[in-house]
Structures are given as C-alpha cells and as structure tokens.
Length: 110
Length: 298
Image (cartoon, rainbow over all chains, first blue to last red; front, side, top):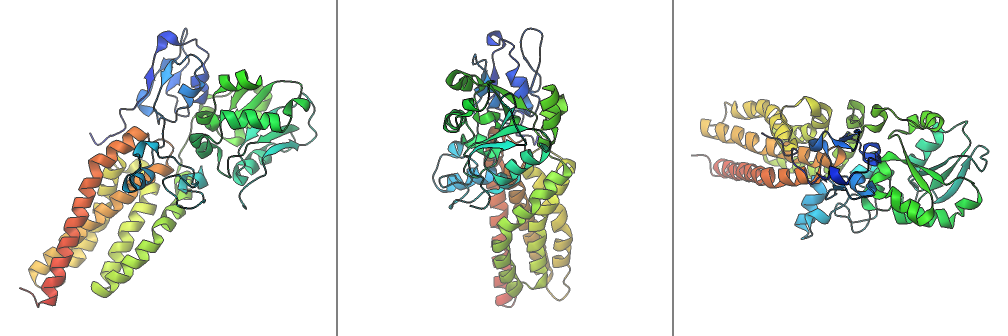
C-alpha cells in the first residue's frame, strides 16, 4: 500500500542469457546478480528502468521500456499535449522540462 | 558555454600507447571529477560531445551514446595514439551505450568502471569492482545538495503568492505559504528515508499535514473572529498546505536516483487529481471566507 514502485516494465528471459555478466556491471541498483549458469534477477522491484541492462545485453535476454522517472517533466509534457512517455531529462530544446537551452535540475546534480 | 569542455582527446601526464583511455562527458564538473582523481596517472581522456550535460542525463538522452562514442573515436584518430582496443566508460553512461555495438562498429571493447570517480584509480590498477562500487547512493549530503535547486524553481511563484496572501490574509498567510513550500523543497528531501510510506506523494501529504497543523491551529484560534470563520480558515490551511507540499514532493522524483517512470506515472494518476481537489476545495473555502469577511459575516 502507498507504494507505486513495486511493478515496472523489466522482463528477463534467463533461457537466452549467455552469462556475460554485463547486466550485473551496469545496473546501479543490483537488480541482477551473478549466477552459475545465467544472471539471476534478484531485486526486480528495485529497477528504475534506466535501460542500461537491456541495451548492453548482447542476446536480448532483458527487455525494459526505459525512461526518466521525473514527475515534473511528465506533468509538463502532459500539459503541453505531449506524450508523457516520450519525455526525457537533459535540459535541451525539445526536452519537456525546459523552454531554453539550460541544464535542468537533474542535469545539474548527478 | 561556461560549463562545457571542448570534445576530443585529452592527455593526463605522459601517456604511452598502452595507457588506458577513459571516456567522459563534456560537462565541466564531470570532466574535472575524472581529471582530479587521475592526478599522477598517465592516461587519455576521451571527451564526448554531450552538449554540456553530465554522463547520467546525457546517457538517458542518448547523447552519451554508442553513435557519438564511435564517431569520437574516429574524429580523434584514437587508434593512432594507442595500441590496445579498450575503453573505460563510467557505469552511469551505460543507459546510452551498447557495449557490444561499440565493439562491432569500432573494434573497441568497453569496460564499465565504478559509479564514483573516486574509485577510478583503484579500478585502473585492479580492473575489479566491489558491489558497493557498482551501487548508486542517494545520501543525506546528496539530497541536501539538490535542495537549493528545488527552492530556486519555486522561488518566483512563492514570492508572488506570499505577496498576495500578505495583503489578503496578513503575516500568517505568508508564513503558511513559505512553510508549505519549504516543507516540500527542503524538509522533504532531507527527511526522505524517514517519512512513512514509499510514495513521494503520500510522504508529502504526511509532511504537509504536520507542517499545516500548527498554522491551522493559529488560524482557528483568532478570538476576534466568529467561530465559523475560524473553522473555515483552519480548514483552508489543512487543505491547501498538504496539497502544495505533496506536489513539490512528487516533483522531487526527478532529482532522485531510484524512481522508475512506471512508478512515477502511477503516482501522477493516483495522487495529482487528489492534490488538485484538495487545493481547489481550499481555494473555494478561502474565497468563501473572504466573501464572509467582505460582507460583514453571517
């Protein structure tokens, strides 16, 4: 209850995994762990959908709809009639949270 | 632009053809963070054109990406300076990079170094990482660091609203506005892990409610006004202040290191209508209160 972060779009197909361990190297939240024959999905609810694992998996054993979890950008996108899912961080012209070419909050601090 | 480094190949110390190549973004703070920890280590730094954006955000946008990396390898004629075919990238650049595609297109093998630049020297000597090096943190200091940016975003609307409230309600109205905003922009990030529930919105409602309570008591205990007006004033504070704090708390999701788009979207659909309803009801009560006072009460 009062936890919207238990589900996400991460899907893992261990039968395709070649145990290259890329996913365990790139995930910043230890969603995957090294296994004997293939990577183990140990904390799926910790996935922030950054997409690093899927992009670096050479055999498409991981799928995720990557995107930025920023309410500000998504609300602004919705108010401007844009697709909430297409919104990105970055502060450039065309991004949802900035009118001008200036860094946005997330870009200044991380 | 003051925060940009010219993209290209830089040398630190006196690198030789076997020296490592470290890849980073052309955001000054990213570049300086890498350069400062590499003091005394001879190596190359390959700076990608990320439009002055840091590694993490640029990777999310794709400017710190496979195509730019492959293009920069060619533009800088990297292969003429080194004899190995290995690149060391920041782990947080991985959302924009496909390591196997880089290898296929350029012949370079990608290694992902630890998240924090301070761990880079150890990684360069061992090429091994601990689980802690690979895990992102969002410490008290990290959260405190972003609070000024949150405050700046809301500063102008706050000044306008505070001025209006000063003339309509008086000093207590100004205190209420400032309290609700500071609760959402400073108290919330600071206390984030300690506020009950997981959703940012519910955390914001709780914090906003706590901050609103003494303000509501003050509004409701003005003995010079009729009881009904006291109740309406207190209710107004209890409806508007938690809604404002909760909205600001929800907006903090973009500054964190762990919220997923799916979760944030779910929060928006679940709580924003409720926030709007609370704020709308509060404003309606405030207008009613104003009318009562204007017309001389009941």
